[in-house]
Image (cartoon, rainbow, N blue to C red; front, side, top):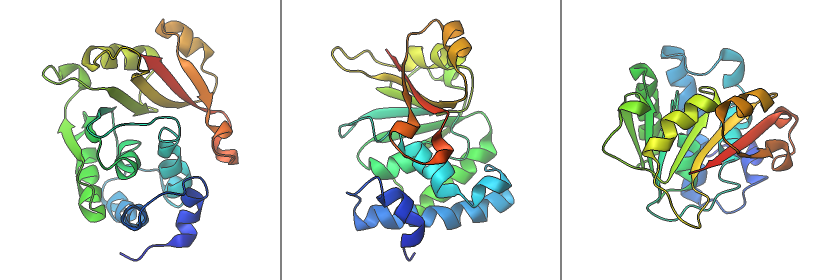
Length: 212
């Protein structure tokens, strides 16, 4: 598929080192999501026209703060239509992602988008994360799925502890999170995404990190 540089300018404005293949994969996302969203609604109608800002760049805010080595294992809890895992899998082609959701039709979209974009490092699983007993991960990621208290309760058992590494749960959230963080009993690191990407859309949006 031909690249659409005007669409990707928003991404390349902040990330300069994508290969041509990665740019083609990113460019393929818009068409793939528009086609599948018409069949199975995983992105709101108003958001689909802003897919690179609202979904792709938002997901890649995690990539701006982590350095994942080859072979790192990541679980996307409640992956929905594939955010943040799909853009992250393009960014980190040598990292393995497991995209988990309790709604099977959403995973159908993820599988289809991965096929169109040539993404090989995402496996999907129709399950609740608390039912995954036989696999451990270096990181769990999530976007706007559940309160932090629940996310940590689900993520903690499937995460390996790595001494001297800040691995754990990384989630994307918005709004006033003080009460939610207090109720979670965790002491997360909180980073405003607007500090990374100077786009108005990211005001009041945050990356929350809880170390294992």
